[in-house]
Image 1 (cartoon, rainbow, N blue to C red):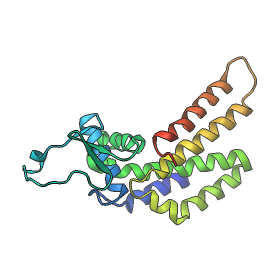
Image 2: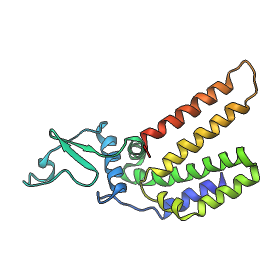
Image 3: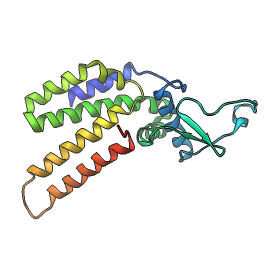
Length: 193
């Protein structure tokens, strides 16, 4: 927990603030911010919101236009999580969510390594993942990979727990298996790849 919390704080301190839609992080952030403010992914095409200038092209990187509606080209999983951050702390809260997700991803990796290899290997595996550059970079900006890691690795942890749960009449193993399957299934809302 200490390594994951330290990693999350480190990422929050060095977070990237990609607000403009130039690449994926900007699209994710704008999509999540829109959901937070309007509760829907359907964005009306309204030139009046931009001063009524003619000739604006709303079909930009990450967005398509059809029938007067601007539709984001990404899955809604990460934008929904970013919307939660925006509800809690505005744009700053949304920009902190990648660091929170990165810390949770490192922690869920430690949980999986601990279940498969033992407690000491969990600490070593968590530390190695926290220091790997790909993990550092994707946890500083709104990208879907850390959320996929949380759902995938957390779901695998729950599935493993369901297999080793005591066989009592309480059904704890079935509950863990159900939540594990739900977490694994929800990865499709974040990334099809």
